[in-house]
Image 1: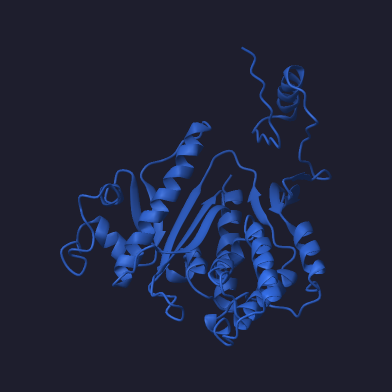
Image 2: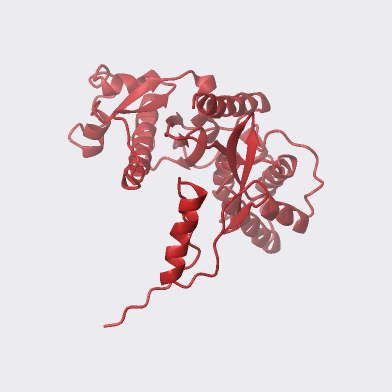
Length: 339
């Protein structure tokens, strides 16, 4: 029996010396035919699946960055948006989407779908537009002129923040920050009153997972929406932590989920289970039992102004976004200094 295995686009990240890295790839090369490999260095950024990985020195410490700036520039040039007016917030309020309900023509509809497809691709690194792109994606089947106007604003924001990058300091240990948020019935302007879940997970100060999406059920209270969002965050976090453990890392349990609503904390402590939420959640459900297991996870209160998941649940103003961006930078720098 002969088994042939073909692998494409393999990226290996190793924490080791340059000598050990070269020895590893030499052994791989002796057994498998490789097109080539390289090491990210100060003057040698690498491009992997259109993501540029760079290395730089800041404040005497080594940092790595990840971005899609090159492709974003080409995208904006292709659609005549590279010189768009400066925008500090991609969607400061959702009213723009509903400002003109005139349906797009078939040709413009096709353009809208194409633009959304590209923007979804860019959310691999541009977490700052994830909420806005997700909201605009809900108009794919029947986009309007208002939706197109809002989409163009997001593109203008990209042109204004072309140097945006994911950044992480090189460290010897790992620090996790896990944020959860919800917006109760935040889509009332559409045909749905469902709430929205926002999740942000940082590893050593860099976003490694985020999402913004409607909840599949309609919540009757902000507490229900918050608890559901917390359960989704717990599920996302546990998957990343399990992968981290499989890679040889260690995880300190219980891990913390940062929330800005007291409902999640009260729910975990069973102080509100028999009040407003009676009959909403079946306490026999596994996800409820998992959420209440304080040995695995604990809900911790964080100020709303510092909840990074807030940017994934609602339209945010320039001031709010600036504050959240500064908090993210503060966390990363704090980790780098603590080494």
